Image 1 (cartoon, rainbow, N blue to C red):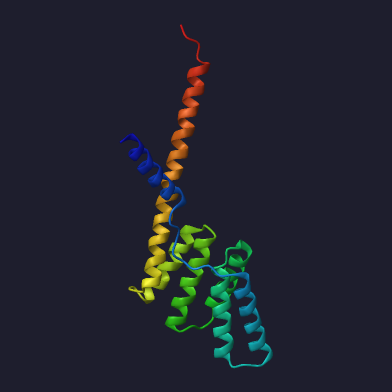
Image 2: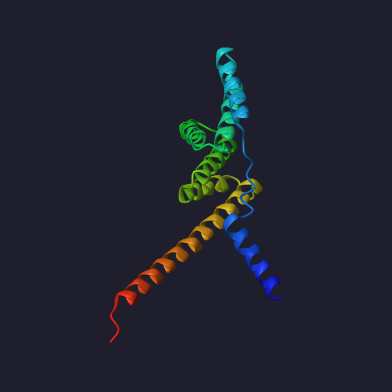
Length: 169
């Protein structure tokens, strides 16, 4: 019985700290290079604005879904710059969502939530954005619990040190 309880506890603790992770896809360096080539070709071939814009969006998607932080930061910068342009509601929704993914991947959860809310104002029932919102809220909760645990451990250690240093009468 004790072994089953220990196994269950280990399983819960392991899944909490390792988590199933978010369900967001990851992009590879190869897919980023391919998207960069596509953008370069669209610019060099004087393609129309729609083709160029779609190529840049694919590159932005690949960058914010990268496992490499510099790629994610580059994707965030591209999306921030493109948000200031005149966008249709669906373009703004998509760019806000991708920007929220970038902030989520870089650990800036409050900014990710703020930008994601802008996307959900445009399309409140968008399942992709709602899924990111759930992952974001789970991560914030997880970080809060870990922070409380670290604080409690520090207080306990401090109390133990004080007790050890206090002379007994």
